[in-house]
Amino acid sequence: MALVTESKKACTVNPLKMSAPLGASYAFMGLASCMPMMHGSQGCTSFGLVLLVRHFKEAIPLQTTAMNEVTTILGGYENVERALLNIRSRAQPQIIAICSTGLTETKGDDVDAYIRLAKQKHPELADTEVVYVSTPDYVGAFQDGWAKAVQKLVSTLPEPGVAKREGLVAILPGSHLTPGDLEEIRDVVELFGLHPLFVPDVSGSLDGHIPDQWLGTTIGGTPLADLRGLGAAVHAFAIGEQMRPAAQAFEQRCGVPFTLFDRLTGLTAADAFVQALAELSGRPVPAKLRRQRSQLVDAMLDGHFHLGNVKLAIAAEPDLLWSTGSFLAEMGVELSVAVTTTHSPLLQRLPTAEVLIGDLEDFERSAAAAGCDLLMTHSHGRQAAERLGKPLFRLGIPMFDRVGNAHVCHTLYRGTRNLVYEVGNLMMDQIHRHGPDDWPLPAAARLAAVAHLPARIERLARPDGETATASA
Image (cartoon, rainbow, N blue to C red; front, top):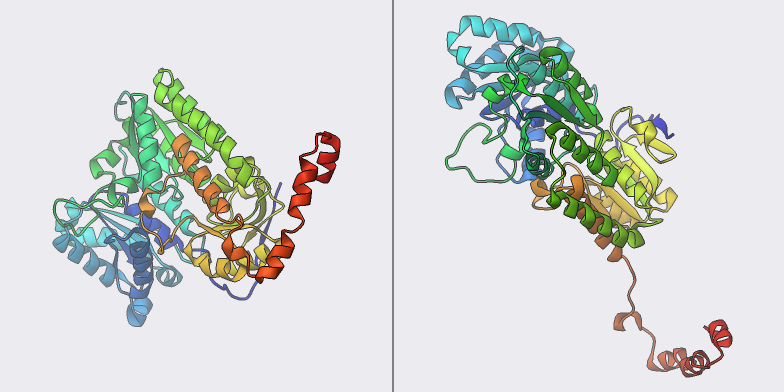
C-alpha cells in the first residue's frame, strides 16, 4: 500500500496540475453543437483555450463571460445574460455549457438563478439547453472538473422512465482517455453487436477531422437527443474511478445498472472488459479480438527484456497514473517516483512506496534522488528530462511538441500493445552501441587496446570447455 503525501511548499513550481474549469470545459467539448463557456475573467478562458489548441492543433470553441473588477463585486448576472444572448444569436448551439471559476465562486454568484431569470426574460432562449456546473479553480484538478461536468449532464438531461433499447450501452469515459482510446473502445463494443453511446464523446469532436462547413460550436460529439434518450440503455460502463459519482447519479436517475473499470490498459484489464461485453451480449469473443490478445501477449514477451527493472518516474492525473503505472509495474518496471495532482482512492493501491501530490519540481527532484532511468509526464516535463539527461515519454495533456495527440491509443489489446512498443523502443534508443565515434584515442592507443584480442580468441577456441569458459 502506497503512502499518499501532499507537498507543503509555499508555492507551486512548474505546475503539473490543470484546473477543474478546464477539465469541465473539455468534457463539454464532447457534446455536439455545444458552446462551452467559463464564468470568469477573460484570462481564465484564454489560458485554457491556448492549452487545448496547442495540444489538439484544432480550433477550440470556448467562450467567457468576461468578468472584470466592477462586475465581480456587483455580481455577474448581466454578463451571463449578455453572453447567453450573444452566443445563442451568433453560434446557435443546441447546448450552452457554463462552468464557474475561482473568481466568481469566491464572490458567490448564484449562476443557476441567473440562468432561470435569463430564460424568463428572454423566451428566445427556450430552444437552447443551458447547463451549469460549479468548478472552482481552488478545489480539485482537471479530472475532477471533467467528472463534475459528466455527473451534471447524466443527472439532469436523460429522461427517466423511457423504454429500454436492446443493445444500447452507455459509456462514461474518464478524462484520461484520448479520442483514439474512445475509437478503440467503440470498435470493440460494436464487435459484440452492441451500440455504444459515449457521454461525452471527444472522439467525435476532437479527432482532427475537417467538417464540410465551418461551425462556431463543437463539430461532433454526443447529440442532445441522444443525451435525453440515454435512459434507454440496458447497461452502463464507467471507465476510471473519477466516473463513479457520475455512474451512480445516472443509475439513480434512470435505473441503469453500471460496471466500473478502473483501467482498460493491460492484459487483465482488457480481458475483464471483453468478458463483460461477452456476458452482456451473449456472444462469444470474436476471433479478431482473440488474435489481438495473442499479439499483446507476444508484445509483452518481447518488451519485458527492455522494461524489466527500469526505474520509472511518472507524473499524471490519478486515473492516468493508475492506468499506466499499474500496467508498467506488471511489465517489471520499478515505480520509483509517482507524482499526481489530486486525491483519489486508487493512489493507495499503486505498487510504489509513496505517491506525492505535488508539482513537476517535486517530480524532478525525486527522480534525481532515486536515479530513475525514464521520466513519464506531459510536455512540461521536457526541461526536467533535459537537465537530468534522461528520456521523456510524453503522457497526458498537454503535449504541444508532438502532432497526432488525438489519435494516441493505449487502451485494450491494441492500445496496450502500442504502449509496450513505444516505451520499449524509447528504452532501446538509450542502449549504448559501439561504433567509430567511440574511438577518440590515437592510433597507437587503439592498437594497444586490441593487442590482447588474438591471445584471448585462442584461449576461447581451445577444446577444453572448462578452461575456455574460465578465460571468457
